[in-house]
Image 1: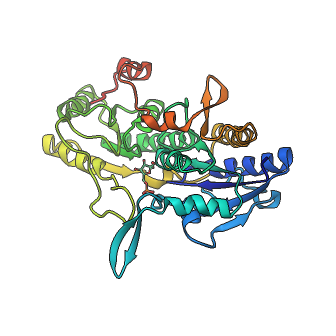
Image 2: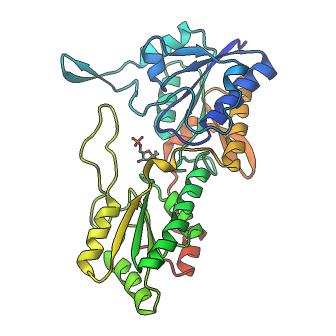
Length: 361
Ligand code: F6P
């Protein structure tokens, strides 16, 4: 017997989160007559007091097309390793039991967790401690297993393609090699799909460590053939053969180490090899995570949200919604977080890129 459910958004935001929240609230109220509580700032809302509010139909009106999340989010609130400053010193606590208890005190019969691999892994571990939850996969990186695609990815790819279209015209005018650094921590889906759709000459992804000389050869060969500009897309997690990924120096409290800077590093490497080439770098960064979701992402997010509520009604707790062959299905959260979905090295999309003459490093 379900009376009340909760919903939270965890981890990095992405376009479509509000569309999921809206679908969850509407389906829970219209179809089942349940109460819905919104939990603010991911699992932080079940750790700290005063971060829960009722969500009614009025609260979700007009948010379908809005980027971000009306509930707020954080990628720094892992209840199993919660960092707190005690007398100026950072200490790590396991507050997972408190989270499960807090959900019970709130009277939540189930919780919808909208998150990427980190938040869903936490959800899986909390489920084993008694939290009743279902998952909705989100991430612009598209690196979650068991679903054909996550919402947010399509919007991010479109943003990157828009940037590439603009870079083309200025690269051609100035006869330059322009590098676009896009997100993609472990998986190169954004770089690869945006690179092909945005007519890049070089695409570097984390799955294929690059040989700098192959990149130089590509740029020089284009120049020799009379095409005096090149477009290079590099995923933030890409690295040279035998080298390491580039991280930002400072780590924030409770957060993973942040990637960033491979574009600039690659530019330096290119200049060192061939100073005749003028190189410039654009880091697309969080532009990929912001703004209004595409129609594809709005629809996918809405279908995911409605299905998540149906999973609760059917008692399929511990499951995540997923897209498979045009159908929304459910899969165990445990399976989805067991392995990341990286670009398969034998995939047709890589073959296509090679066939088009794109250098993959
Ligand atoms: O997981 C999505 C992602 O966009 C990664 O590609 C990126 O490394 C990370 O989030 C950055 O997160 P933030 O800047 O919010 O810490």
